Image 1: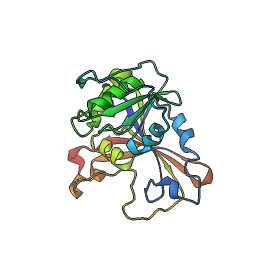
Image 2: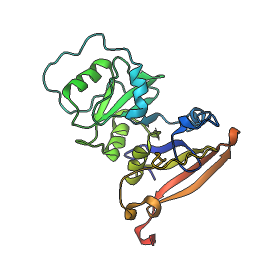
Image 3: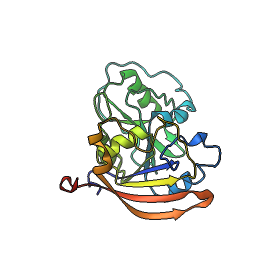
Image 4: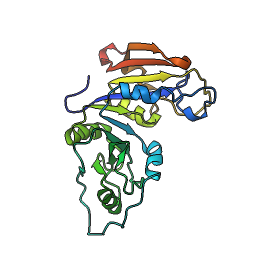
Length: 243
């Protein structure tokens, strides 16, 4: 159950039947054919992706008309450039590697960058000059629970779609802040060892989420092309119920 202090968080992904998410190399089907339509049906008021996914959007940005002026140290305070956007595109960029230039929206969704306090001052000046919002969640690694709490507090986000890589999804699942899973199961087998999965994180066998998170199937819909849309509600398992 989502806390009143944070948004409802829905992980929305496409995977092969063996749980892999390298969609682009599946040549036997259009694995993305349903993704955007279902994304819209989930009615999120924000969506979140990691640095690798967001790189393509940042690469297409127009450069800033002039470099931002160096006016001294920049405080590590959250910066809200816009609160009234119709939607928000949340980019996880712990080290400040993405250059957004003058691009502050993606298809109408205002860009919000989640950073850590380790980013250089110059990057913060560039974000301010480019009209992007940013918030801090951790010193060197992202504190996901803090990040989603700030997204609600600063921008009023009530429903967040997480469409990240396996490590982002896994970290958020482990932190207990994913409430639902929307999974488009594609009729493809990837099979390559080491390929990213829907949920990945580093840990011991005892830390597996298999005995810590319960998935209750709430909907199952057969789509065209052999794709199946599965929806699960995710809840923590009571420690007393673990084997």
